[in-house]
Image (cartoon, one colour):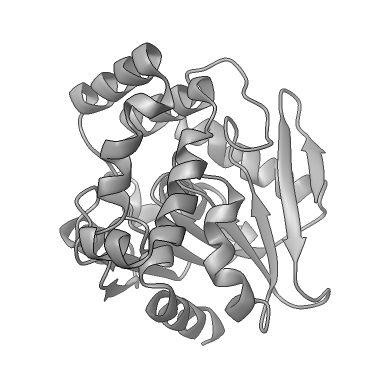
Length: 259
């Protein structure tokens, strides 16, 4: 574990895996922490040194005054790499983390070998939807949105058959800092990268969840068709495909990164 001191924030990060192995950076989704990637650790450390961090406003990282922007959160990643002395790494981000990956692939491609964009889109939702969620959190805290969010994160079948994993995801969400969550909601609300996808010049894999109501497969198809040379894959899951379809997710992502 460590803390990277940025000019205006502290970013918490954690290393796992053998020194000297290729480095893979994981970027979390809205309302989670670096722990959302626990399902990947055992398989991925056989091939990579994993760098997981908490996005600004989440986990043990600083919650600075909002609203945030995806650009701001993306430069946090570049500064983290600079502080750690890392010139080039692989990147895997889900949802908000995927939006960060799109920005990085377009603006700082020289810092990344390959990028995996999971359950994400160049533009997610409408301003009205995000404003309503922000208002709900301001009024009722994280518990005011948790039950509705978890229903979009994981399918009913998975929630019924995996109560422990569902409970862990829900606890992450309910434990999120409301102000950090609101600030990142604004970042996702205000970002539209549809016109810059053609500028992404890093090998990209898009991962869609067949049953994802937040960023359905059609959104991942747009990414794959708009980013030069990008590849598309789909797993049987809702929004948190890395948790719900762990084995298939790990297989397809590892295959892409190791080619």
